[in-house]
Image (tube, rainbow, N blue to C red):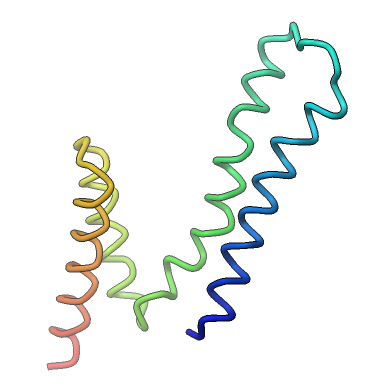
Length: 104
């Protein structure tokens, strides 16, 4: 993966997140009273970022087995309330170990 691709992905995600947060403020000048609409707009950035990053998770480790192993470890650690650093290191270690054992 080259640096230009990574930078373009990060900039694209930042732009989409900013656009989604900025548009409701521009379109709706008054405070929204509808609780459902406010809740919906609050979760849109998370849904968009998830939809953009999830496909890359499955192809990031060079093989589907290593990627799925890293994803599963990340989900388990996140569900147990571990911090971001622990989740990221655990997922990377699981993907690395899976990839190393599959190559033996």
